[in-house]
Image (cartoon, rainbow, N blue to C red):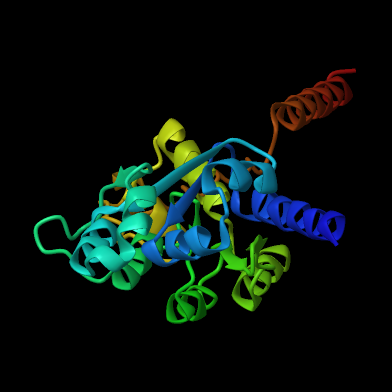
Length: 249
């Protein structure tokens, strides 16, 4: 059973690596409910989670989760001691802490940009997180850590990307990087979306405004050429000479 669970975890981790760009060290966001369940089940979080995820892990929490355990008193003192060993991630509620469930949801909003695994036993939180794509969930069953299979929201997102309907965050970052390198500004992006720029009216070419000149008529050819005149003059001379010889024998 342990080998089957390990294979399923490996398959799920590969899914988030290839489709949502998860990389080591994996960041696991832990709340007080998970620490309390680990204390009761005698689960060593620092030792077992890295083995289960088969990679380097950074365990972290939020200030709101710490404040919530402190407010609940000595009953959760052991869970507070465990949670204090993890790194504190900054949240938006430093001056006015909110319940841990609300704080966890705010850390995952906008597409889980920091690629958090969420470790919690809060059923309401896991129900809401399953509606968001790209959020791996960890919880404890009896004395075993379990990685939840990809949710329907994650599967639908991957299918939409494969069909060409959406692009992944990694693709979006690479596109933005290429735009910065090529110097493509906002105005060019608007032109691609179909917003046409107004063209300035330019003055007409002055040569095209000139009136066409009428062509002068060609001169008429002369009625008689020089050769004809020479032939006529020679013919007249011959007739005159012939007449003179006839008169003077």
